Length: 178
Image 1 (spheres, rainbow, N blue to C red):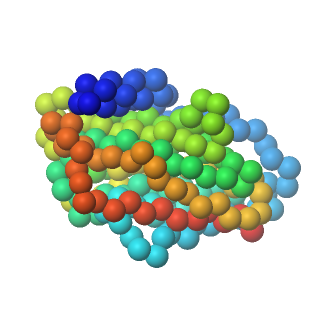
Image 2 (spheres, one colour):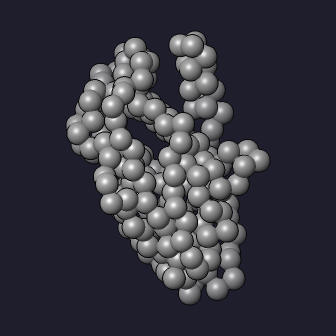
């Protein structure tokens, strides 16, 4: 099981483009008239999404570790309604940067519109991090009026032995286009 999970995580990280990924989404008719916003879940978790900024039709969300135990990496997927929003990229946060030079990756899952795979990891031998801070930022372009819930799935936070840290809660929220 350990080897399978390690292989999946390494494959995910190495197969995905780095965090400064841009999907190349073209212009959307009347996009300038759409205003993006984000409403976080009512119950914030240890790993949560929070609004970093909303400018016009672009919303930038922080993936935040909140009072997290020591960890070296994370992987998760998010589903959303791609008729409302498009994933356009991600940027590094700061909490992993305090330990070393981490690896980040995020991309739309091949053949599954409305689903992204995300990974962030320190390198072997790096000091684990803990506490509260932004792990990375996800950017979405709102292309239509309406709401789309963001849902975490297949989410995991790992320590330096690649063991899954249990007892954590993950919370997301809803992107709205008006």
